[in-house]
Image 1: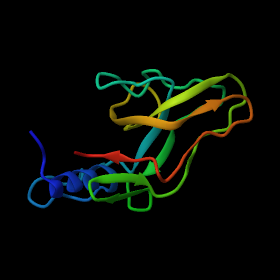
Image 2: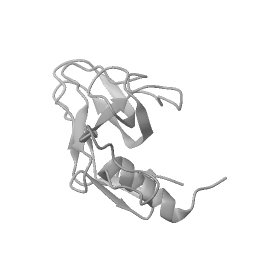
Image 3: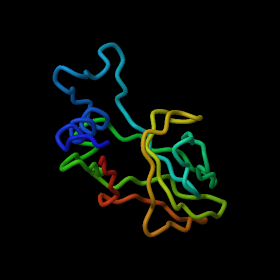
Image 4: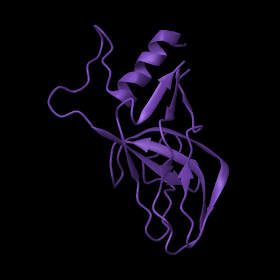
Length: 142
């Protein structure tokens, strides 16, 4: 089974930009999410995982809110990328390596993990390091 290319792009626009899919799906009318929350992980959270699965835990770590708009995410050709660099809080302690990222619905706690992917190259995190995901960080719907 496969989705049509147009629908794949429409689905990404709905999730990341809040753009309705005509005659199929609308963005929530009463209280739509205004942000998605990007997380860093030390291993693949997997399809059964949540936003907390293997989530980084360095001192001062927090998920980063990214607006569900074209100003937060760029969607084109069945792919979505951050519209700007996503900078996480600077590490003030601890040491770990971020090998994966996630995009979910909650600023903290288990949350619903919508997408996850590999961070390449991995980000070694230690005191003074500010982890970042660049605008080449890609999610593909296919």
